[in-house]
Image 1: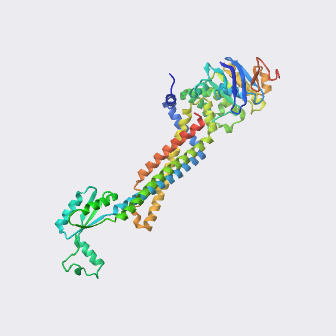
Image 2: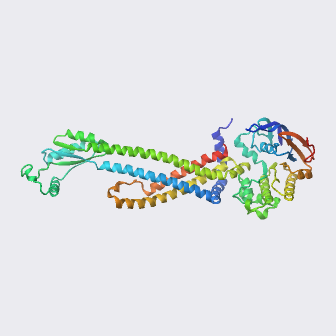
Image 3: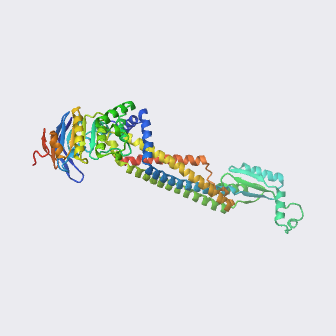
Length: 229
Length: 310
């Protein structure tokens, strides 16, 4: 599903964000990417949704070699992925319904299907009653739920979440993670970048640890602090 | 076989602008304008003012050109015959009309001219000029040419005709006015070109500011899988709407301005009647609308490119 082979990323300022990382994520996995700030978690996710290209190495997402993917094909790759961000990235001028609908509009969905699918997605994240609200009228937890609904609307095979609980209180964070687990149980591969040790420890899922761009741990049913080097 | 950039973009554009999407994309443009009202207002105001200045300059330049042309059109060649009788004067007229580039040649009424002269100079003894033989004036012809610049050539040809005694053409005067008209024309073309480019930059910048305020929105659209064309089309439609509304506002300003200005000018200087652009309201509105829409669309396309990184 996601394969990285000796992938390195160097930013224009000379910093190596990832250094020869090799990794495989299989269908149906739920994995946490952990590590300190600047360890390369977000860079790894950006590579997967092709916001960055590796400096060296090869990688494939959903069978597509993203290193040779033409820029015009990038939107089609992203439609197979659902992406959730720490700052939600909802369109500020659109309400919840329109934000979720936008992801369906870009794939040319029929208006009838749009209505049906949005109803299902908002019900799944518990936001049916907030469909007319604009992002600035909602709490952080509600905005993140709306972002998850948008990420799920096209039935992606992979859901990427970059610090999805970074701006949320512990209770709301736990609700969001449970929602992601529920989505994973339905068959979607979920990859979460996080430095929330409580959640990682509590979930006991696969843990991929990065340190200064190096892959230092890949452990099934791991915890956040398992092997401090 | 690998697609070219053009083929790829054409295919993506066709896929984007299908019947199902077009309604959504147009709706997106109007929603974008409504929900970014302040920025839209700023862009439209900038476009209206820029087009207003451009339009005012164009009208003034056209007016100055027309004024210069009208002054040139007033120049005429006066042809005085020798002691020719009416039949000979008619023969002279026919020969003049045979010259190419001559628009008209009219024999002036000798008696009327004589009466006018006498009324203007009542104390002058006209009878003493040639003895009392009635009207002492020779036959005189008023000749006009199609182009003022051809006056000298035509005058030289007329001088060779039999029974022509003298030809007055105000050669130096015409050359001076011609030179002035040429300068006015070149200056107005150059000014219009510079102003058009400046207007293009100002409008493009105004649209870029609007898009800059929405760059996060554009980024989010890319992240949810929107193709660049899917993002671009509503924004270009917005640019076109900005351009069109700005043009209408500029037209309204210019119409009101020209009506008041022409009333004022008429009161101050009657001779300025020929200072008119010659452009009708429809032509002015059409020209502003076309320029507004083109600059709006082009400004959007160029500015969006910067944010899409394609």
